Length: 287
Image 1 (cartoon, helix red, strand yellow):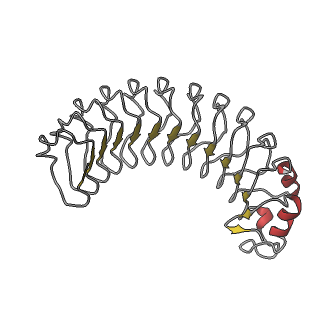
Image 2 (tube, one colour; image 1 turned 180 degrees about the horizontal axis):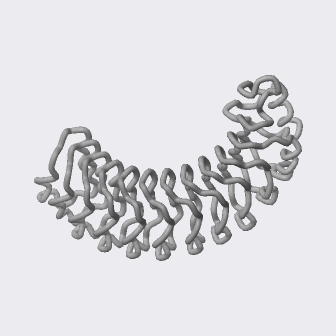
Image 3 (cartoon, helix red, strand yellow; image 1 turned 90 degrees about the vertical axis):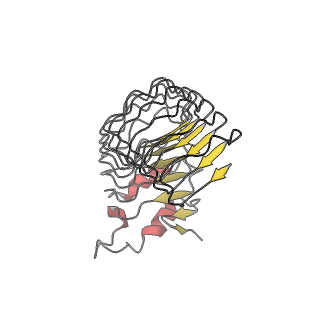
């Protein structure tokens, strides 16, 4: 194992004698190019926060299971075909505009593509072993092409341009769904998601709490910063006896009638009356 973080390293070199090297961490350096990596034994390569512009010269790393190229300047997913043992791939905060060239990475269980410029969910059909898919902070406007992900437990699509909850019916093992900061107007499409424990639809345009009362496993419901105006909506959550955390602040029901910037003095009490088993309302624990 070799950790050389924050050392102002500008070039990958002089590693050829480390024939038993399994983990190489070169975070927060000034590396511009992936090169001189002939260490077949390498299982984990971390080049997070450098100035790399191209994915290249990885063909000898056939035993790699974890690759982190987040916070670089990469514009294209390419040259990964030989890394068939890859289990986790991190490409956060780059300049990637298209999901492509991943079809050979069938052992992948985690794919992290947050904070890029991706407009469409596509070309993931062969990644049937994915359990976690992170696509937050992109430019995606439609939930689609997810029908093969029966093993998926975490799906993160927050901070995109999604207006409709759809095409989720095959994600039967989904445990956590993150859709905050989009343009969603209605909670829907969750009929088959009966194993969800966390549902985050905060900061959308939702006017009504609905279509979740069948999710008996639900533990956390994040619905703050929406447009919920009717207290009766809370009764829809009564069947959810495992629910312990609810976020509803800055909805219309949260606002004081005198000043929309201030909390309704009855807000917490009203929630507790309908859902007395709740342990946390917004960021505050219940007594």
